[in-house]
Length: 99
Image (cartoon, rainbow, N blue to C red):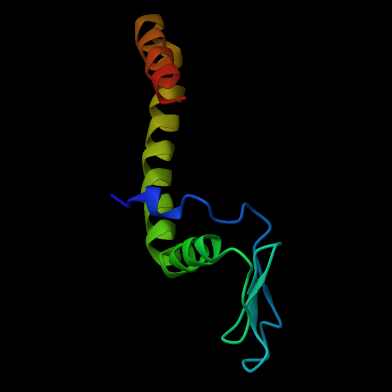
């Protein structure tokens, strides 16, 4: 499991790659700052958290993929539950716990 606590304080949303086809100019924009070797931000804690988040992006992606597998399986079970009211009630209870 990924320790997401180490990302506390990172810039929220709106991240993107600027100049993705120009290796010498490419950088990551967090909406608050651009990250390149010569770029910096006023808040060092936010910069460190952002860099950790960027470095762990592949791990986060794998975690999302794994969770999506569980969601697809649950969705299939939920659709099958339409035929049995007791099963449907159980699935509704489980869904409430997940949300």
